[in-house]
Image 1 (tube, helix red, strand yellow):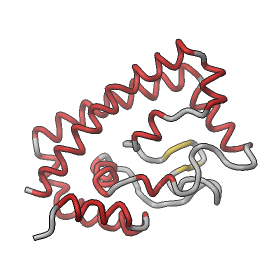
Image 2 (spheres, rainbow, N blue to C red):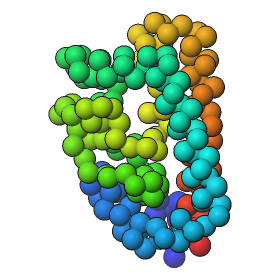
Image 3 (cartoon, rainbow, N blue to C red):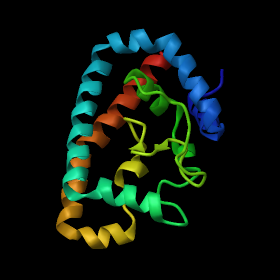
Length: 174
């Protein structure tokens, strides 16, 4: 039997449409059981809380407005560029399905990530780079204290996301 790490690394190489289809397949096979699992439910609640804290902090600091403006006006596109969707793995997409996210891809611009809509990212659970990365221009305009505040705010989201992904992987490979 093939090592699960080898199998998972192959999933990273799939085109995003195939990853989405595989996530949908896993959702049909495992969705109800995952949502009944106490560990998964606990991490889902923690993740929801972490997402709220991160989102509020981004809004309070004006990061959401700055990024939306950049995406709408930058001729070369924003940080949410084409191909970023390929950083997403099947488990992260599966977790988005567990949270009721529609995984249809329809970038707001041809040079943008497939999950970027007119109001920002359409995913609830995002990749580490999508949570943590801020462009150098935005970092400079925010200043050190605001960056520390943002990094502190995203800590709960990142930790819960990691723990949830791990719990889901264990459950579906058991």
